[in-house]
Image 1 (cartoon, rainbow, N blue to C red):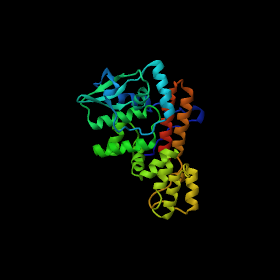
Image 2: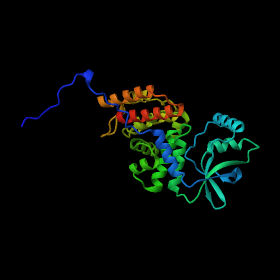
Image 3: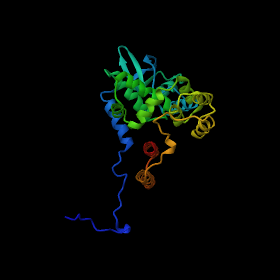
Image 4: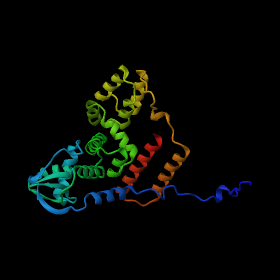
Length: 294
């Protein structure tokens, strides 16, 4: 029996498919994740001297932004409460170290409104920290990577489980775990010199030989911070990629991937969005672009 085909339709009459209609709103994902993690928190006023600051997700702070934040808090008060965890008679700061630091510079400020959590596990507290920091002032990718590695070491979770717990893509989790395993001096240099993330990832993919060590020294000194600089260093030193690994720069997105990115861009231009939503949408588009280029 001959196979039947649908009649041909001219391009003008073909139904257009909105590739973005089923995309998840990242803003809503973050909000839902926060609501779930902060369930059971009580809002109360706590003295700053009773709050203890331990190791946080964020380790890089901008002094000028702290001063600006302090001025804003002094004029308008603390709009977003701190998040703390009760441990006996003490409170441990979970989220809001920038706000806490800023308030510490204001002499007349001795207490602050706080969301008080109780009986949370270390895993839950780490997830709350990560979620809160990721949704605010840009978290440095080195701090993000180290926090995700810390979460995996604490919980033994797989990349997929980490993705579910922290609300980020599996590909981003994988990249973060690769970065977290890099030498400490390379990671510290990346924070000092604002080195592009993919410089570290592509350097890590090189064969272990003298050429790779020369390039590492360039990264540590701040001479190599951009992928173009890395590419030139790789060519100059005749460095090679490890067997079985392919450089991202040699791969091209498929036609369908390009179509999706164009649809995302067109859709975002037509929508009336506030600044925060635009920022989140741009981050989502950036993540999607990185994923299709892998």
